Amino acid sequence: MIKTITEIAYLEDVALVTINNIPNTVAYVSRILNVISEKEITVDMICQTAPYKNKINLSFTIPEERMGDVIACTAAFKSISPEINTDFNGNNIKVILTGAGMRNTHGVAAEVFQLFAENEIGVKLITTAETEISCLIDIKDIEKTRKVLHHA
Image (cartoon, rainbow, N blue to C red; front, side, top):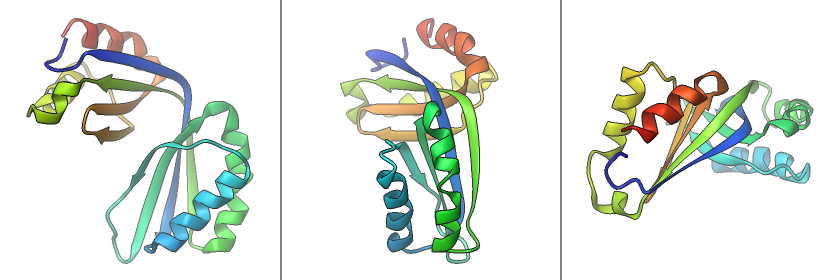
């Protein structure tokens, strides 16, 4: 196993939502997330791009079974700002790598992504915490991912 990683978990049936061209203020992000919250949809792996020309993109994951509910929210997103458009991508798995030693060990992410690169495993979204790396991958790569991570 990769240094300091003590647990690997897999969360199936995850959809990726990316909302593009959001005006760069936290008020817009708040309004978008509130629209989703009002539908009682749980979001995870929230990732915001750096601003470009005063616009940001916001990506997050949801349970795949709720994708239709978020698609229904797109009109509300456009009412927040007409330039907003939304992309949806299903058939994903969230891979969660955890280990307390990550907090003080360099190179863990480098090793993980080197393995993914060597084995042609695409990563759609990455989020991290002090002791966790979460990656969203296509369902078609799950067996290869399991083999690579458990034999590393």
